[in-house]
Length: 216
Image 1: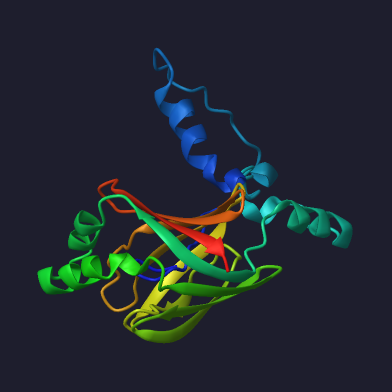
Image 2: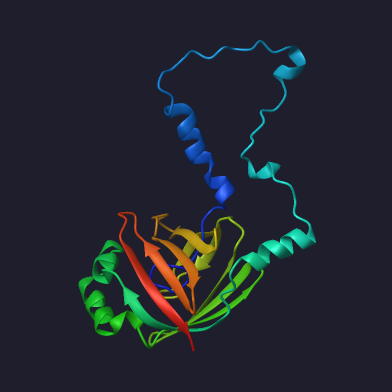
């Protein structure tokens, strides 16, 4: 998902995100600081690699059955979805995205795509293909939900972007940036709420807008 596209993305898995809060608590949460005691290592232990308990490299591999159970617990966004509602201050959102006044006025006059914008989602395992159909035309983008940075295309203007899609609970979240300038773009989250699919976009300043889709 990209800022003006209806592709929502993900963020790093929960176990990876615990590194930040864990570090902050350990180093900043104590009431007083005490000089640590330094243990003298023998020659053999001195050259052992440091253990990183939160490293993704130390996670056990999942078997086929466990992998299947994990995938069953996550939502599948496959379907044909029509945009039925746009919530939030979209004009300020687009302004923060450096969209000019004339374009913002035109998009506002079109209701930000409500009733005319459709997403066709093909979601299988960790791959998701989204075809965006709007008055501007039809475009397609594909992502692999693996937590690794990858190149994609902004369906609205065809510019290359770098995205990092992964699961955050049952929401598919992505961090993205322009491939040429590396400027950070809004974080997008896609999740299901009853019969609706929600795409939530958050800018660097904390401004949040939402798009609500319903199955056609």
